Amino acid sequence: MEKIRKRYILIESAVALQMDFEKEFCRALLNFSGVINYSKMNLKIIDKKNSSFIVRCNLDMIQELIVALSIIKDEKIGEAFYTIKSSGTISGLKRNL
Image (cartoon, rainbow, N blue to C red; front, side, top):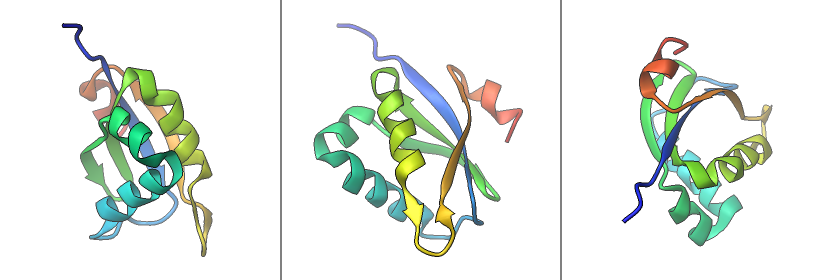
């Protein structure tokens, strides 16, 4: 069985993160990418602080995640998420968090 490679992405939100942020973030990605692609992403929010957070994603689906993040918009502020950095390890991103 082949090992599934993961990547970690540091994402910054244009506004401060709310309590129900994880549910809304996952719902927006699910609406954009569809059920099959969302399940292939194997998405997990690892860490969050202020307006930044780290997401784990499968390497094969990283491009789809970045495109989805750039397209998701908030009605009040316009673009909601910005991809800051991508890394193969969490420690590489936590220095920038």
